Image 1: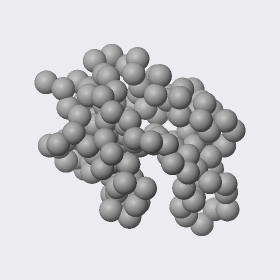
Image 2: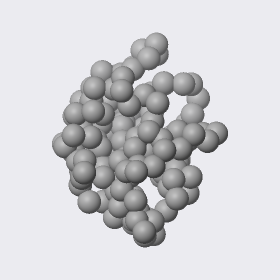
Image 3: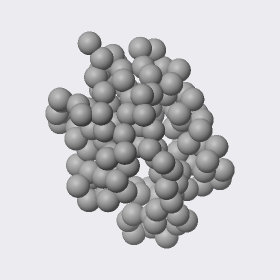
Length: 135
């Protein structure tokens, strides 16, 4: 049975629109996975103590049969393919992809907590989630 996962995309380095397009295309090509809704793209101020440029953000509703840990590994592979370097926490990045929520599931494992612990604090995620939430 497929789950609906809500996946946040963000980029603030290079061609931000192209990074988001790349992520959407690659997510859509994952096995047993399809994008069923996408929010509008919005520009937001960076979060955290590191000085950096504004982000483009978008939320996707993704129907997938992949387990959350497997989905996360695939999403991190997409980030790496786009040149993501995890040099400093909350630093600038070509592409950031987070699993924000999975309908009907909670998870607290090393490296993955669902719902994402930052969800209540990120107003742009809440706005974008409202655009794509299926239930």
